[in-house]
Image 1: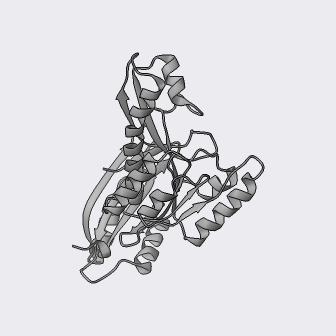
Image 2: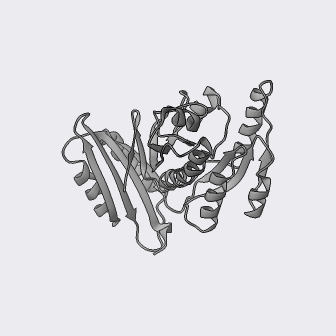
Image 3: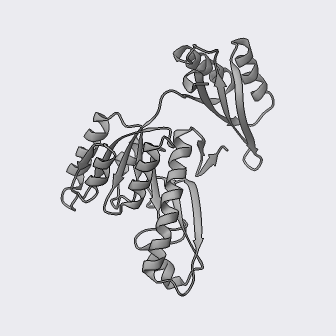
Length: 286
């Protein structure tokens, strides 16, 4: 069945009895079918969290009225409820610099329909990757960044994001630090891939740092961006084995495979509304 008559609810609150029953009754009274529920309780903090996928009768599309009624339930029950309509694919901007692997991978997955989103623009502070965006028929915008032009460049970036009505920013090895103001404006809507298993080896040259420490595993971390460098809530991580025989170049080569799959996984989870930020942690619904 088409997903045009589906919606996803992300629900959170302090844990107590009756939350699931209240929402199930709400759906039953309106003839709405619950097709998937994933719920859990953080016993240490007393937090309840749930992802519920619902569908209305065929031909009926969940819309503003359902959202308003759920807002009333949230107020009455002391819940936080986020409603995401399945037919509304988020618009994504991919930011990159010179490394092509994450950009290529995301655009290939987007082309094949693997990602539930619309990549509407690629932005880079260098021009080398324009041909990749052109191949996939995605607009490419070159915004040079220098120490003296950072403020003006970011202002231009904001205009591009507004022009394309972007919902999510993906930093696909974008080697620039975004301002605190921009990050605050896009809270939990900027995903970065860092080429190490955070919190180890944050900042620049993580493969060199890993090589110097003689690590036996290297990894990649996809996380939401916040004001702390490489310190935002972690969405996805993965690792690959290495040894003393691996040079820094070998580590970077191995790491690229992990980077691309880890970033794609995080983007997919975000665009499928499978992520909920609670404090410094990200809950991932299966």
